[in-house]
Amino acid sequence: MVIVLLGPPGAGKGTQCKRIIEKYRLAHLSSGDILRSERAGGTELGKKARQYMDSGKLVPDRLIIEMMVGAIASAGGNCVLDGFPRTVVQAAELDKELAEKGKKVDAVVNLVIDDNVVAGRITGRKSCPVCGAVYHIDTLKPKAEGWCDKCKGRKLVQRPDDKPDVVKMRLKTYHEQTAAVVGYYADNGQEIFNIDADRPIDDVTARIFEKLDSLITAR
Ligand code: AP5
Image (cartoon, rainbow, N blue to C red):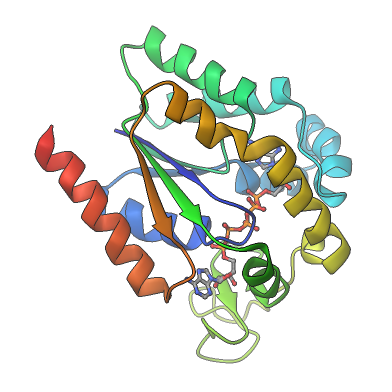
């Protein structure tokens, strides 16, 4: 099964993906996490991606498509895609790659939320540099303030692209380039589950599970 999770920066894609993969036993393929790991490893891709990520712009399609096609193949095609596709070109290429393997996107989950809400979420986000666990200073606090619950003794950090001016640019980029991906799927007859993401985390999860359960039952 291939699930695409769409939504603006800070909508809760990463948070919800961690829950989806546990319930449905899928691989979590986050383009942002993969890019951050490439950067941490000092790879050529990581070096190329840096300038785009730190300024809130999209990494060029050809780099992302190659990276994600490889990741999907390694996951055996059963995955939740978080942050990919982010342009219509990426969405069309994903469809093409999946069709060549006799597969398709099974569900598109679109987290719908206002820019003002996500801006507050992102600036309060803290994450673990080791395991990638995500917290929030108000809504999802770790047990010991500032430290990861799982990787004991690891201090939580703020992502470099979570500074207010970069967040502003990421939201602009989302509206100019990524919002159109929802229209691409609608035009292609793909069922889209629009989920109100301005709700408590557990409520959003419950709504997503309800939709995915109904999809699985209907198959
Ligand atoms: P990426 O890492 O994908 O960032 P993003 O899409 O901007 O998404 P975020 O990780 O900021 O937010 P999220 O929706 O996962 O929210 P989260 O669950 O953490 O991309 C980074 C960069 O990489 C891009 O800018 C681009 O340069 C590049 N890139 C990546 N993919 C690319 C692609 N396909 N093409 C080109 N370039 C690409 O939640 C946020 C906070 O809110 C957390 O603190 C969380 O605890 C809290 N929270 C979550 N849900 C709730 C809730 N319901 N109520 C209250 N708080 C909540």
